Image (cartoon, rainbow, N blue to C red; front, top):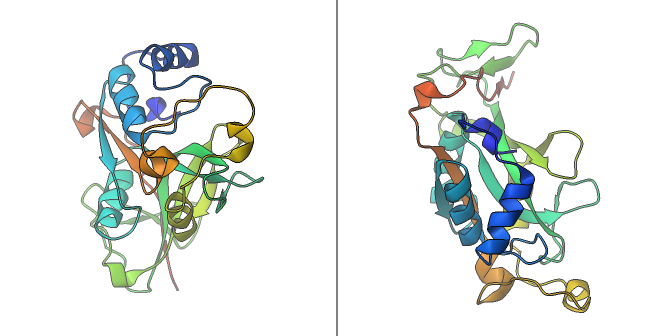
Length: 223
């Protein structure tokens, strides 16, 4: 799913991804409990540069993540998946990966940059232009992530805070999996060391000008 956003010269099949992950010892059953392994797999298969972040989605990482998504680049997020595919907190028992491909920001009235263009169909919804700066942190009232999990039929908007909280509590290997008799690849230090607070940003190796130019993640102005 993320590869389609990276302007690849050719598609990479799911079978090829699984084959390489098995050959490299990253997985045994299709599981990926190491963000570092996920980053290496992405670089090998998707002609991209993978940037591994720690310490969650907030703090110094927040601006980096927002700028990355605003530039039209995807990120890979480990989180606990609820029954509706949205983030929850199950201590890592329901750990899955999602592709994050865009943003919806709720902006304080009067703080929107003139470089943003209003949507032609939805009043109050704006798209950033190429030179549109990120709004100041104090002017951002809400953040939602455009997210897709492999088992979901459609993209969803997730609360940034909920995604951060789910990502930051991935600490334990599911006891049900531990007792099912199958072999899983779990890194040294367990799920906590492999996934907790980790995010993988995927950067295309080509210049941004060679990428498809979407309208950009929408900015919703508060009125």
